[in-house]
Image 1: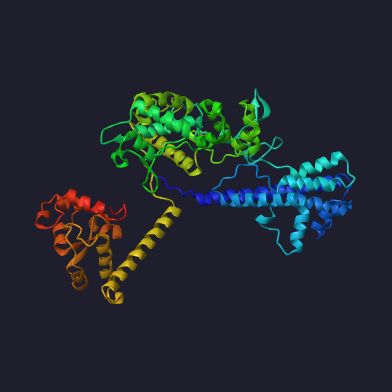
Image 2: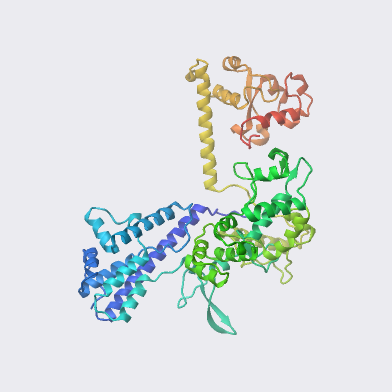
Length: 601
């Protein structure tokens, strides 16, 4: 076996934040150095280590209308190179609180500049004089407004147009996040510019990073996966949901019903919710089984979230052609950069006006890819409409789930092109190494089963422990409250008795194996009347947690002995207990009716 250190989301986030911080500092340093050496080469300064002036905001305001000295100009340009505003040229996710706060401050500050006809330096200087600190979200301004101020300052400095343009280019240059690291001059395999060899000649090629990270279809290995938010992918998921449903125990949704759901609900409204579905089917929700469940165990069904947003503003002639809709969603998925989205949508030549294009470009939550390709869905969707089979049944029946065979070489090789997390990649590589060694030692196997642990990661375990502790504290509090209600002093009762009270509450005042009412006075005054027993015998499970404890009468506990509940109810001893629980079925129904954790059930 192989053991690995887990890779948690928190660690990944910290790593990405540190890397982002390093890049920001590096690029800021490069801009400042580029400005300094540009000024040095044009004889504006004689040394890159010039004196730093402490009234730079006043100098920026002065530069709006007056010529600055060379030293003053150098200080102003370096200050602007350090912080040159925000472009926020990606669609803002409403669930990202920090982005929403920044966008709100940006809108407010931009409106203030426009209303009062101010440059940024004038607004900032006014804040400084009133004692307001500039290092927070309230000080965020658009890069366009910084560029406007920069050009106004340069217009008064008697510099050549060529030099002015070079200064603006250096200070305002910005790399879109989708470009990744590196550049044409400094290509890297991690960025959008990469070294390639064509006929032995070294060339630089440009790639779309999101497209590069796009996985391949689970069925057709050379086909790219379809955009997860596309109409076709959502239709595929909805049909799979519908075919998984069973009505009144044996009924299935017909082809005609599925087509009517698509034509009457999905296409005009962008979704069908469960109440609408069951009403259309003429049944109650409780009569339908097979729904998917969310974390709250609530029934859910596929919705067309992106398409439903487009219905509001996209012209009917475009909406009526799903190929047009999916071509737009494909572009939105590839990049979140608004400018790139606008440019690519215009290339589709769909005759959309600027307002519609801008609304499309600013759509959020349009990301990710399905596990299958369009080619696979084009095969599976028609059969899901015609039959009541789900996707897995169709894939199996059509032999689409055949694994690729590796025929070359004596060893199984790792697919380095697979899009996997670092931990998953490590697991794959180690598993392949182990299998290759076993094949070398024992020859070929008929089949190989690889088992991985299902333990949660540290953060999940901590959360579960905290929730358990909170639940136990609540149970202890209720035990004390129960004693107080009985005019008893909780301090007069030991931990074992309080534990019995907690189990009494859990079991709704009934013994676990007979369902007989528990005499509360007897429980408090006679320590032998009711006993705490291990559901799965401790000698077997070594589990002494609350999940393995229940409260039984002394006779029930003796009759059960060192058996599991199933063994006990199969032993014939149950009939001697006079209670509503007298077989496995009644015991199972009683346990399922209790408000206890799933693990305990």
